[in-house]
Amino acid sequence: MSHPVHVKICGLSDPDTVRAAVDAGARYVGFVFFPKSPRHVSLAQARALALAVPDGVAKVALTVDADDDMLRALVDQVPLDMLQLHGHETPARVSALRQRFGLPVMKAVGVAGPDDVADLDIYGKVADQLLVDAKPSPDADLPGGNGLSFDWRLIAGRRWNCPWMLAGGLDAGNVAQAIQLTGARQIDVSSGVEISPGVKDASRISAFIDAAQSALAPS
Image (cartoon, rainbow, N blue to C red; front, side):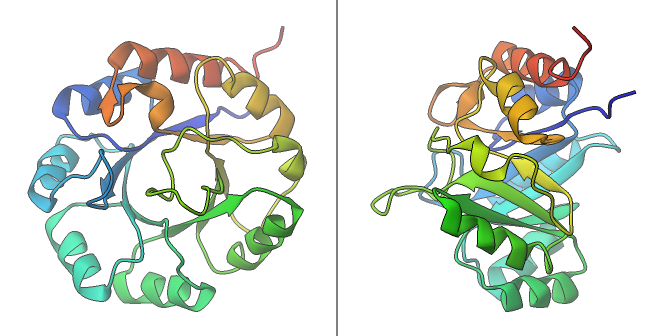
């Protein structure tokens, strides 16, 4: 019996696509708190969206180098299950935030080449989960959600001290190959289920989750 693949739909910003993600079988839903992003939501928006998410689906807040005041407001106002750190947070910062806010922390690590894989080992010792993402180009405005993938062979067969999730340039057309090549059992998607930046599409969400969950089905 193969373990199911768990999917996170990140950057949700309206009730209809949150419902579409949940109905299609997403195990995580992500809300972005980063004003430069087309997926950015306010605390009030996120609270309303999160309150509509049923038990059993984890609510994740994506932040980028957020300070403690921002994180405190976030945790106080929005019912969350996990913090996702997508900036330049150090391992010490990851540890401190886990203790300070009492929520599991997922740390995103960008991968472009073999040297970046070492960072996964370091953060895997302090985070509750890793998000293995494509490293953005130096001039990119956004740390993720850019539709970029990386050479998945860099992490094929690798395991860390904590659960991990694969991200970066995934869509319904390539997610099965990514799962088969890397052994990922958790998958994160944002731009790959959009019709334009920040605009999610219910049918693309459903097709993506179907493709991910059927990747390990016996042929």
